[in-house]
Length: 135
Image 1 (cartoon, helix red, strand yellow):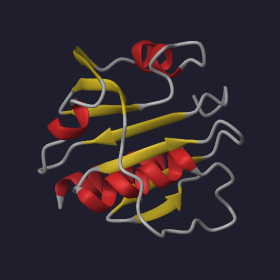
Image 2 (cartoon, one colour):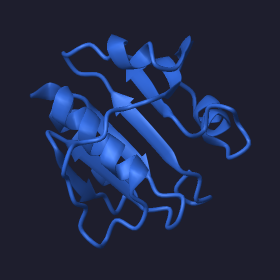
Image 3 (cartoon, rainbow, N blue to C red):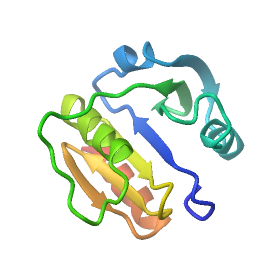
Image 4 (cartoon, rainbow, N blue to C red):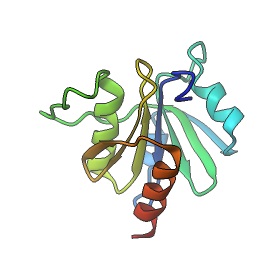
């Protein structure tokens, strides 16, 4: 998605349930696959503007609305605001890791515990996700 500049917002559940947020979208209960994720975030997809929520090895729901944090300001390196703010919002309200792919730049960011950082490579993203999910 990054290479094709397909915007994405993906919340990965840790211990705090994401059910409340899943109820704000379309329930899928489907196995994760690359093709399914790309289809969900493809710009003409009816669910592309919302978040995909992941539990274990499955997609819990898609097209989910996430909370925006009150009074949070993004640094200038984050050009698109709403997806990034929603990632911060979910990571503040839960212990989820939230992946953002910028539609404008294709850049990948990760929000954890209210902090949003750019992740330059997929291996780095994988390592950060695994580290967060273990702790």
